[in-house]
Length: 126
Ligand SMILES: Cc1cc2nc3c(=O)[nH]c(=O)nc-3n(C[C@H](O)[C@H](O)[C@H](O)COP(=O)(O)OP(=O)(O)OC[C@H]3O[C@@H](n4cnc5c(N)ncnc54)[C@H](O)[C@@H]3O)c2cc1C
Image 1 (cartoon, protein in one colour):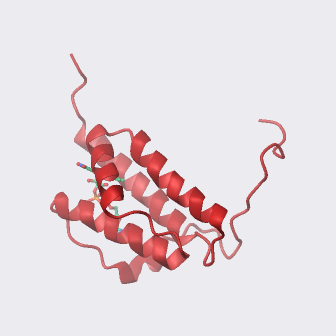
Image 2 (spheres, rainbow, N blue to C red):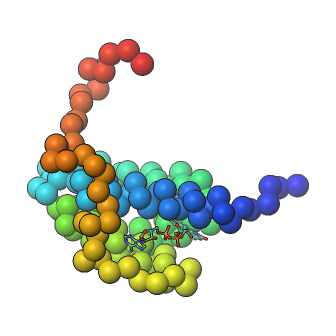
């Protein structure tokens, strides 16, 4: 017999995931290069395939088809994701979030330092 769903755990996973996704788009470069744009697009497509909750993953994949990731800038990416999350909110009967408040809600505590990209093979140990 399959394991019963656990709504509390599913909601907790959702909150943690949204936090990561929103914080990531709000730290995405203001002027991304092609490689950075490809990375963000691939990340969302892979995340939608590998998301552990099956029902959510199916919904995620449908939404990405309908609303493909916007990767031209930090603003475009973060507003796109905010709108995508609002689509999920609507389906689940949750209130719409005002996307004007994104910046104040998602602070990773990373200050102004930019995202550091390390070339493959340069990380020692592990
Ligand atoms: C891709 C994805 C698909 C999902 N699909 C399903 C599903 O099909 N069925 C299901 O039961 N659950 C699904 N979930 C989980 C669901 O979206 C919620 O995470 C979960 O129900 C907990 O909801 P919550 O009310 O605590 O707030 P959450 O929706 O988790 O949001 C967390 C916090 O983010 C803020 N927030 C809300 N909306 C936005 C927004 N638009 N932009 C930025 N910040 C916002 C609010 O402060 C909110 O409290 C999915 C999660 C993800 C990541």
